[in-house]
Image (cartoon, rainbow, N blue to C red; front, side, top):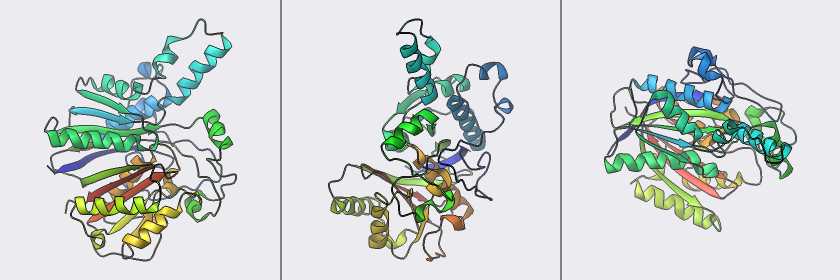
Length: 353
């Protein structure tokens, strides 16, 4: 069963709305940044906008863009990945509980604080009554949503799916994560964040959606395989994970043209990327993407977008290149992400021709 990516919608901290490449990458020097939002009134009725939180607006617009790009009317499934859902509404609900001694609470804040609110709101807006599921698996949230779609295709239950990764970063949550060392104290140039030798990452957020189908018509790329590893005890286990993935997909290491990884600039946890690149893919072009997206729980969705569009355009941005191994072929991209060495994922994407 061949599975193709036919539609894209990307709202991120880069100028990525209705784009299939980032022509002028934006550099940030502040530790907390927000998405570059479109004019939501161009996509959603202003009367409906009043009741939507910002992350829901972003999710609906990115979903609409992906569906429009794919040229479909209604997906057979809506599968969402989000690390923490509508974080701003969750904070409002919890703050109101504390301030009002758990009395006279606004039901809207509670309704919008549940993690599946995003997928539900997309379905309501699209008037879609088909399969709908949400995954909240921290850094594997988008990857597990993608895997669900992959299984649904293999079972023959669907012919198309709207899959997305959606997360927001609020000032309060940023500060909480900062207390436990998630973020760097100083960000001089986010585009070169991976050259840093200090702990911590650069915070981002995003809303990225894709339409997958079994039709190669106007496809960006083909999804060939994916695999996950949770909490490896050592790097030897990670090596076995890579070997098993290559074997499962009948892929030789030299067949990987681009090895695109989720390096975030955290010197404590980025070393595994370099070790795997040197061990398995010394001849491949190495590339990164979190210098463009920042780190957030569904940042792998941005990486997926970057890999898919790179295959379609047959090029990657210079700012993403890590080594000087230019490849003539642009057939296979292996996407590798991990979060604090707990959740590892491999996704194989191939060119459609």
